Image 1: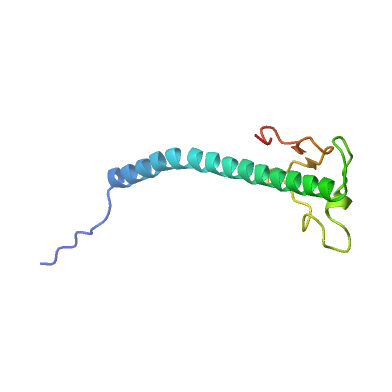
Image 2: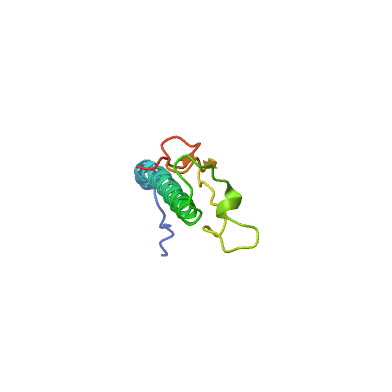
Length: 115
């Protein structure tokens, strides 16, 4: 006689697997979100440092004093050869303000500031 018994997973086994996957997701997703936000903040701070360096270099080359106004067109001339290749953008959607010589550039996104 043939044994017609089928081999399959039981409902309990499937529920245990789903429970384990749920626990792993509950641990992994918050860590992923935190890592993504930290990465965005670090990228923004690196952009702010680049803007600040370009602004200070422009001020030295053009003999500008503390408090002199700086525009994006001063740092990124239309013909090229500027202090920055292109205007950086905040990965979190904020906008950058160059500010005057001697002050740090700023971002409109909270916690994105130069140390």
